[in-house]
Length: 94
Picture 1 (cartoon, rainbow, N blue to C red):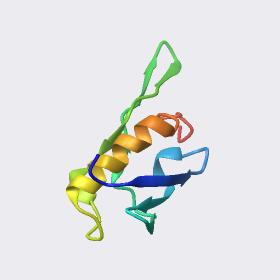
Picture 2 (picture 1 turned 135 degrees about the vertical axis):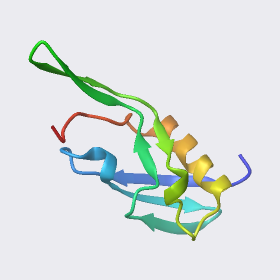
Picture 3 (picture 1 turned 45 degrees about the vertical axis):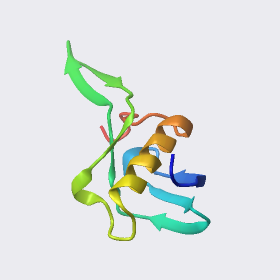
């Protein structure tokens, strides 16, 4: 990684974890992101009258990267999220 991504702190409601608030230090500067540029790589499906929840890695939504960071930094943040945060798609929004 080219940038120092640290002090990752993520809060999301248990019923919609993928739409939380991300606090992170990037190269020594603190950022708070309340509009997600990440998406859950998990999924929810239904069969035989039951729901099935699959957790997956976080993905970068390139169309939602905030102007305060570069594409390269956003990619590195997603890499750190996948290393330290629970995977996306808890199924809580069902």
